[in-house]
Length: 476
Ligand code: TRP
Image 1: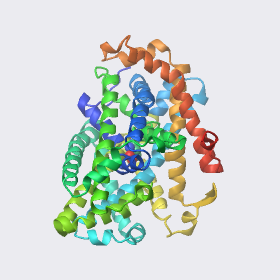
Image 2 (image 1 turned 135 degrees about the horizontal axis):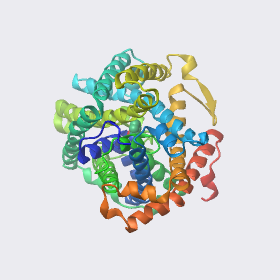
Image 3 (image 1 turned 30 degrees about the vertical axis):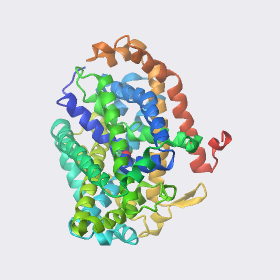
């Protein structure tokens, strides 16, 4: 069944593209702050255990499902279970989820671009004003930036897997690593930086509660792009000669290293320029950190390096975040694009037009839901609060449904994928994988505790978010 499906050109290209998908705002800001608040190195250790013991098997299952079926997520579920339609729900969920995540992530990427251009044009001082964010997201300039992002993502995706996605990742990811390292070195040389490092890395086991374990698990799962159909889709573009086990491991290592390294940037920066900070009081929302807190920190650097120097550091940081967001956005839009290409027989260009137009309309609905249009601003009430359209999309598709999608793929492996066929797919291109402990671990975990854990996380989130009932308190 080796049709003329597009393929990644090299193993490195695949790894960079998948790491580009995984590395996002969550790694750069969410992870460091979460770690600092929740036990430092103790959190880091729990996070790393989850990445390698729970998430890596799911990642390999998704890649194998894509590569064996050579299809988008829906096509993959149909490939494995042609008759029983109930299973196809798993495929549909893995198409709708990325579609909706793309919608709100596009809005966040638009803001990042807006801030980047604000810094480049010499307006860091304005961005650091607390009122700026609220004004900016309701200003007309977001429409301009939305058009720019749509054009840019369209340009990358219309060029296809090798010339678009892979080439983009090969440029943006190395640039991202370099900028990150450069900023870390700069920040570590500032006064007081070590206070931040200490806060970040000294383990505090006492802070590890069931809630914290749950959030480390969730963070690890989201960070690796699992449950979004992305790895199924990218797997379908993988060459059989490229090893899944070692490539997946590289992606997990890269993603975790970037998150870890970002902590060496964010926390020292906060402590150096604001030594009084109490990390417990930092917002746990990546959005308010990036758009309201960090610009202040960058502006404070002007005492040490002048306004231009501060703007330069801030500019590099926002460019870094922009690359991280753009590679994630590209990967997630590719999922429904490959879906319509496979299932409806559309050309890449036609898929992009059809999906792009409808996504932009949804993105506009998000962009207007911060006070501009009442109906969208107070869209719905649940769990004791009123939510905007934007918040609803995040709650459902980002915070709730991903573990469910992960659970379903585990069920597919356990119930509908013959063990030897699954093993053979993982062994293709990885001769040394056969018969290893690693192979046995992957099989064991995907059929036992991984689906159980994912299902528990899903149920817990639903209860907490929509019914205000915290199951974790039962253990506390
Ligand atoms: N790691 C991403 C983040 O930190 C989460 C993510 C993974 C993501 N894949 C994605 C977000 C694809 C958007 C699109 O933000």
